[in-house]
Length: 324
Ligand SMILES: [Zn+2]
Image 1: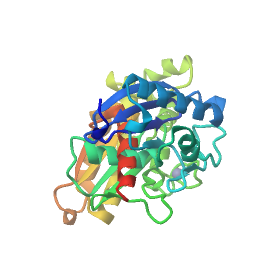
Image 2 (image 1 turned 180 degrees about the vertical axis):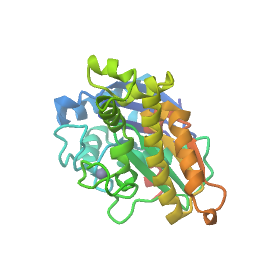
Image 3 (image 1 turned 60 degrees about the horizontal axis):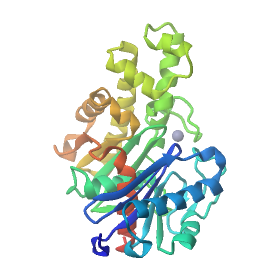
């Protein structure tokens, strides 16, 4: 191993798992380690776990911290990417104004850069994905929540306060269900895994026939259960994913009308539904996109899968070191 590969330590901090790897300039990874976040133990324990994982990752790659350039962290937010503070994170209990970048930097003695996870994922697909080479793209994650990241003119778009890319809280039905954010009919409130599950439960309770009704007897229903039922051609589950896909599709149409994009990449756990989610998204986009936006907006699934987290953390650190 040499230090000339421009490696950075990439940390993908999620509510469920933490993944750490060393990532070179081409997106090649070594020293990959993963462990459950243990979020219930609070920020102190999680920060200690991240530090241990950084040491484990370096050890696995037989490298020293002096041989890498920086640490990049992709995390849920809201967060301040410049000061490296996580203001809050719904899936990380107790995380209020945690100075994550400073706390890691004090121990690791490297520059540490923090980025919102969906923004980081957008940069990962833009930098390392199969569809790299397009300068105006939207990345959407459909998972426990719905988020997004925008690449405009070849750069991640942060907006004035860094909050750009809140795809999940775009309203697509202003008389729709009430979202946790206080608005109605947000894309997240229709398309996230938990909300797809909740809608399915409502339909079953209203008399819809579905294999999910038996599944509901044995515990809480998840988005994954709906995806699995849809894979077995359960008509209610297919309808739930169709509805989720249409909401995401209208969101893409709205963004593309405003910004005239080349590409929309759909990732996140619900993207594992494949065509059952992608097809309704594509149909909505094809049907409703104005012809004046041009023929070229493609909607594709993520090409990096779960690696989008570490690769995004690395890409965001690299962008920051380049002054972007
Ligand atoms: Zn909302």
